Length: 179
Image (cartoon, rainbow, N blue to C red; front, top):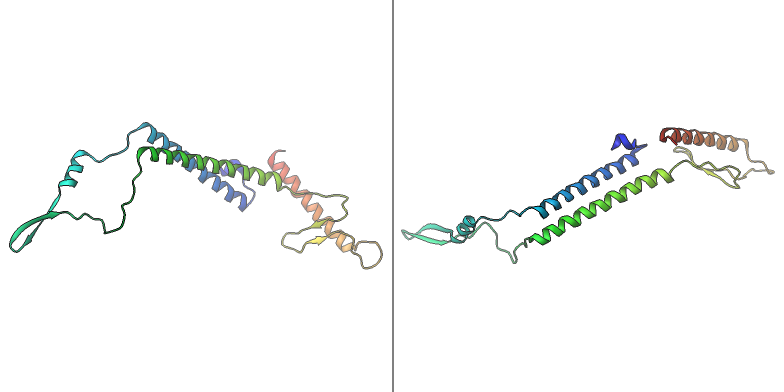
């Protein structure tokens, strides 16, 4: 998937990893649902059920061999763990397959939207433009001269430099995406 999507950063790479996980979980639960729907569940054999019901433990008490019911390997508790019946098991697999299908599709839309709406924006002829630099302070390109109507030359140069950089990044992104 990474080769096909060609992530443009750590966020996109992370989104693609989540997409892959959801895809494989979706496929796993579809296959599990099909297996549960087409085949019989594994059950205890009749011999094992009879052995479990008839088992006794022999022990020596007062020189005599005594027999008692086997206590089992369970600890004392207030309730038994419920088991799933066939219908519930089938329903669970279908619900999990659908859940991961929806998660996969949601992640796919998130990646598409991330790429669609996170392109560089170039604003020309605006009253006010806020320009952020890589790790630097944000610059407000609105008129802020100390005297008169002119914007300081240093601010104009900084804005032009950043605008040029954004245009280069945009052109590079468009070239790589084939648009």
